[in-house]
Length: 387
Image (cartoon, rainbow, N blue to C red; front, side, top):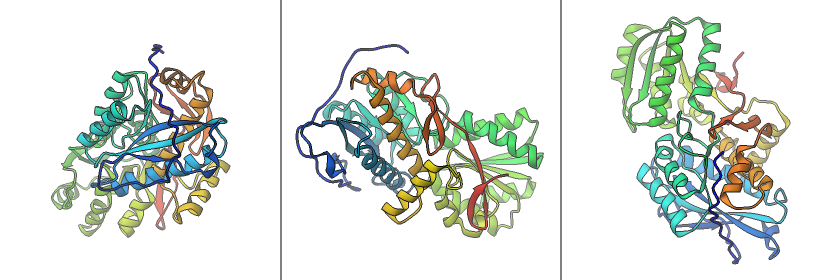
């Protein structure tokens, strides 16, 4: 990787207050959750965090990502980084691209952080990663997944499996078993993740000579999808591929059931929360994901238990990504020759086979995550591994 020597590092010498996220204002909050770090000999390292703590994405990304980061922070500050304590400075993106850009600039220019976790969506990441690269700040997006966003530079990394790593393998595996011939696709035309997802679906289907009968679109925030679904129903496809953010997934499934659509739905990153919201309409949905509760490894089951003990609910895919993001970052900090951003960047790029809740985790040559994708199916109201 290209080496740069600019060092941007802040050491705070104040006691850090307990977590207090605001869902209304873009107010920076310094977060440190472990009592055991009140030791002047421990170096305090602050990390910027950009979250949607207000707006339409708060329940999808804001709260789950916040909780995943908090859980990981407590674990890491219990001793994973000897002599270093991690703390957060948080900015609210307001669930908008403009808000994410403002939050990035504030964290870098005013708070002087050298690392930023976030933002949430691919649309936001597309605009904020260049800011990090220009300022030579390490940036890690736990949840964005569109193709090509990390290629802009060597300071930016992502934890979610990107479209090119998830969709072709998922379509190949499901097509081999189901042999679908005629399909329809439906996606959110306003959202980068959804646009890229539909494009990747169509490319993978073309490679298998699957006939796409129609492609329908909608806008972010829409609630009525009956026109699009009615047109799809008339063509009677074997499968409907849906690409969207979480908010639109349950109502689309519910309205499809109400219209009597019997086609199989395949949806990328369908979560337990989506299953609960869609109810019976979610039954049989197949999803391509990077993580699932049904993955029976010791590290994953311990994570699920610890999260449930802390919050009283099971984690979802976005929690797992945020939790993993901080543990991966901590591994990079631990292995770096210094806490300068260029050294942390280099250490992150070298991570290979690091054990996570996803399984062995590595970064590829452009800073995107590499681990085994999973295919899940909703059976009796639960997401299970697809056989």
